[in-house]
Image (cartoon, rainbow, N blue to C red; front, side, top):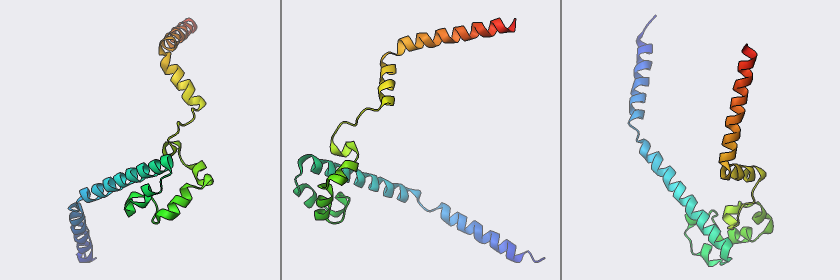
Amino acid sequence: MPWGPLIGAVAFGLLLATVWSFYPASLEIKYVEKKRIEGQTQEQNITEYLKTKDSTIIARRRAFAIPYHDHQRLKKLLDDSGVISVLPPALLCKEAPKTIVESVKSAILRAWFPFAIFGIILFQVGCFRLNGKRD
């Protein structure tokens, strides 16, 4: 069996891997960071518009500072009650309603000491029951 094509394929693969390893990953990180900052800017502009209903806020912004290419259509969308009903509470500057889980969690965190004592007592009871069954 001729080994020439196999050696050539392996050498080509190693060459590609070497060239690829020199590709600067920092370019991708910078791109992701740029997009994150653009997203935060868009969120701030939309929140400000929803708070004041001043259309000049989104009309004066550059293209990447609002999440839609046409500021007039964006205004039309943001004034629609159906769209507003599905927006997250953070954009609407409203306090998100507390869920039952959040209420229980905050109650437990506020009163952690009695729960800790109760847990220690349950642990001791469990240990005593295990010791009593071993005998």
